[in-house]
Image (cartoon, rainbow, N blue to C red; front, side, top):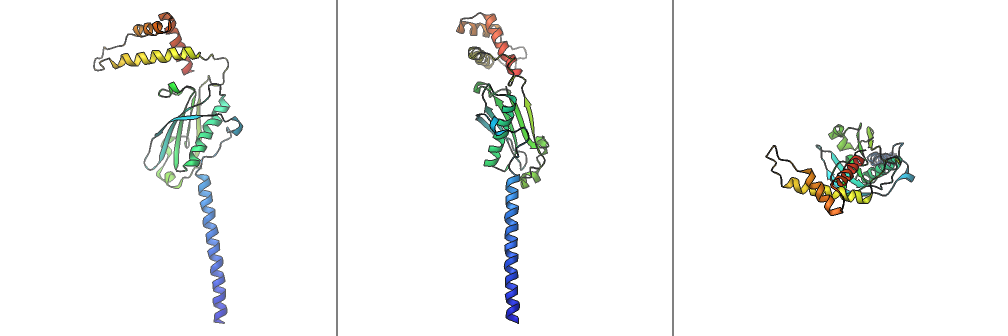
Length: 229
């Protein structure tokens, strides 16, 4: 009788052990899936375009891992393609590191502009669409159930009615920025009346490209307005 009871006890112990193991494996699988960014309704894999990550910046918040990315995308991208591409970047990055708790991406169509304001759009991926809502608990558990994608897309993206400057016009504006930065480096910033003479800079640009000072100024204004649209 005692041997029979021992046998039954061993069988029960084996079943309990198997049950606990299966439960633990299920929990691990669920945690791994939820810690990676979900794809929202705006996402369409067929619309994802090529992209290049130019710069990655860490912006930690307590225990949270927050990252900013500056990326280059094609200039002929549509709004729908841009959204799907930005979502794909977030999915790719969180799949590689599922401990990332918040992401902000700045999208540009030219590498020369990545040190300035975004020219095509941005997306934030974070709890409730707010970077400040990343709590230590979220950072610990990787719970992404409250996460949202918040897009800001420029009007010019995919808009054929907005004329894009030519490559030469962009080059002229880049040279103007280079000359302007060089002049500001010479300025004594402690002097409240110090200022850079814009006419001198425009004339320098005009001389380099064989155009008038007025043409140089018009081109730079055109490029600046385009970047802001």
